[in-house]
Image 1 (cartoon, each protein chain N blue to C red):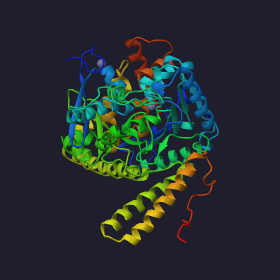
Image 2: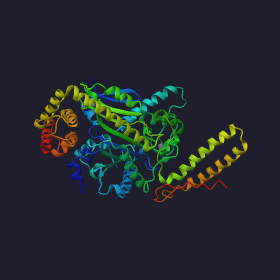
Image 3: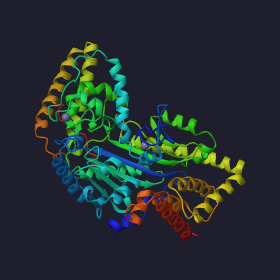
Length: 193
Length: 352
Ligand SMILES: [Zn+2]
Ligand SMILES: [Zn+2]
């Protein structure tokens, strides 16, 4: 058997990976196996993983419209190029391919919402966004329950928060929020009055 | 004093076997993937952009309190042997080491903290520790990340978190992995079942199986599979908890092995020691296999001529790139096998 990595040498070792109880394996020669190393960089197999996941997605949307898909205005990468390489070209790609990436992220991670750490200069904005989302879902509930007075109040609060966000987004200078303090700030809300 | 020479001639700090559960877990590695806002990811940046990004990242790192004395290795200035040593120590990935312009490896004292600049992402910050320490190692890289973030503006989206070149890393950008020595489970024939259940907990398992059942030493890597939707702490904690349970199972399997086949195992362990301490030529594969057996013997108290740290050290310093560095030039395979045998003998002699 020929090595699946270099397609040159004889494969003598089976490299196995187990994910969700499913076993995937590659037949490798000793040299390639050593390069992959028992603790080698995970990124080397991230490409194929994405391709496999996208292969599955492609089957589902076989009759999709344009073949090359959208193009990122900042770096010029097309979605089709991403599909073959598994790598995005810049941070703006995430916004450019937002609709396409969302189901992909759900497939890879099982969710599409980040709940981990936030850069300190973005903490306030991040908190406001969370607050908007919370208010919006409360608003939906109020409307479903026909509590129109409460809904109107919630709608105004959502609008106020969104205006506040739009005004801070422009002046997004790094390091403006918080100093070197340990971050356990008291949550002060002054929009109740 | 931490210099390039010390790094190349001394094994990394994590081989010491001083960390918790070192009898089963060789090392823990935690890495964060980060990119700078407003710059193309490395795969789409020009050489000039890559160099500019590298210098920005390096100057931020030079100001870190956790990286005083760190070595800044610009890859175009590194020799082929240096590159291979970095790869074998897990300080650089193979493609990165051979790659083009604008790349750098940063190595902190005793290799506790290191970084790749312009690998798949602009910054890959990592900590490698002895034994089972995902939570501690995770805290350390996050603290350094916080410090760097004062000078580096990271690409971040409020819904998807830290943005990375590959969508498999998006969100926290954290990868927590442990290298486990599971020879007892492999010998006992339970490895597939145990690893199968680990993989159902959202962790991925990688390892090598040769022709024989555990030809390549029974070493396996366990790591988190997803990076989005959980906090960094939760991810590190999950790996720590599962690897801890795995270590418990491995210890049980070793004990059973010792109980049922004590004499045979003891014979095998002593033979492995004899080969290692007397061979005049030896291949990397044979060192790995014999060292793995020896490691099991040390952990079970079947042999006291060596300690775990020495066995770990053997696994690191006998790799081809290390020998190439010590030997100078391009040694032939026979020369390498000879030099490797000398090195192993010296190593074992020094701990008697
Ligand atoms: Zn190969
Ligand atoms: Zn782009």
